[in-house]
Length: 105
Image (cartoon, rainbow, N blue to C red; front, top):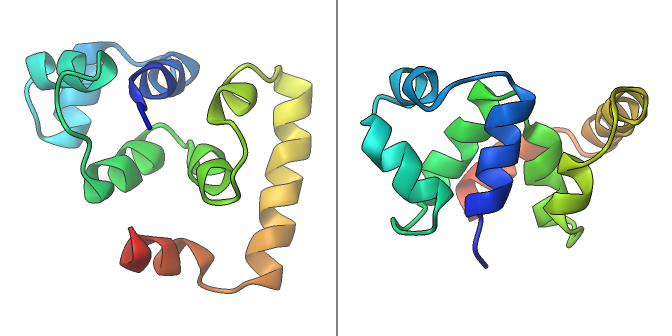
């Protein structure tokens, strides 16, 4: 699965430039560009960190649940609040889900 477009949407949604994302990820701006253009292999730890830095845990959960992450990326602000409520519910139902994903990925 190619994540480049999803990574870009997550970064845009967080209002971050490639340079700002690079600083947060401790990688070069060039590597941010390569990740977003599927020119560099995305490691699980980088995906998890990207999600944390962009507050995009909803994307990580979507991928894990088999939901097209592009659908989540295109959701408007009101729907994002609803998605955040769903994430809270899922997190309460399955404690440690994010940690488990980190181990699995």
